[in-house]
Image 1 (cartoon, one colour):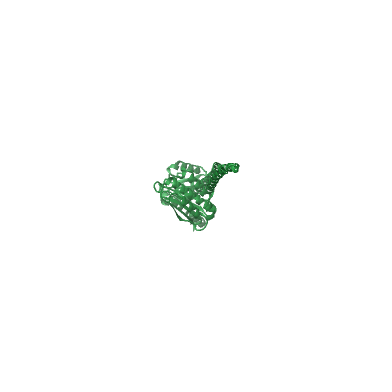
Image 2 (cartoon, rainbow, N blue to C red):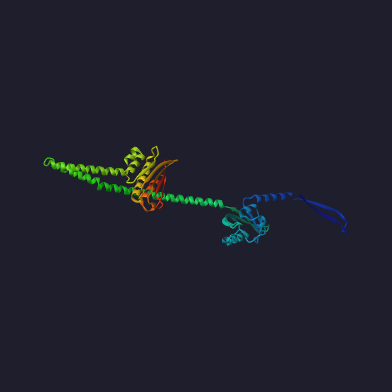
Length: 372
């Protein structure tokens, strides 16, 4: 609405001769103030204006929401009440820097709510000055960054977990390579000490039989009989070595038939509770077979169990292999290379191996391997 100002002119004798009325329209400035107030009230930032003595002159609704104090509680209050005891010196230093004319932007710290809880905030602050540059107070905007900090922490956790998984994957691959080298040396030693020596002896026996064939046929027949025995033993040893590499029954007839062979050879009852109807990919079948074989070997050696149960079942895009016994429990994967090697084999296929083995409650090995 317009402002009215009256100016009166008088003659020397005091008689009024005229007057002037001045109209000053202040409606525009009033509207600007209203727009500014609406902006302050609707801002998602906590806007707080401090006087030079730290008393609060402005406290908007976002400040009420973020810090918990009402507008009435905070107007005129001094002493930087949002600063926790651990950040008191920091808060006073920031106030002094801004009051000295410095501006701050994206300064991350923590401030205290009315209920005593700490809230992560980002601070932007600037001095309020008059036309001459004299500082009249500090205007501070607080942004609640609690959610962003939580997201940053989660990203950091996931990165650390990924880094750990990559390190474990590298270590797993190194162990697989080392295990492969060790297995090749074992096969070389077994071939050299076993079947190869028998074949060398067989060759010598055949040469000896050949020299005696005309002069002493009976002795030649005896040597040939021994050679036949050596040949049978060499054949058995080679078959055992081949079975250790990859059982023929697994490739020819599938996982169920191969596990049934393992069950028949075990000295304790083995109950095969379930198998998938369709054939699994060859690497998955091989991993499942060796996991079951190693688990049965461990049960026989350590568990003192009366029964073992084997189950292989599809679960979505994965296959789950479980081997459980009713033995003494207490198996620790970190103390032996057998379970660690199985975990490496499973993890190399993108799977995971869990061992549940409470003392006195038996042991369950559970592997989950992606089928594709």
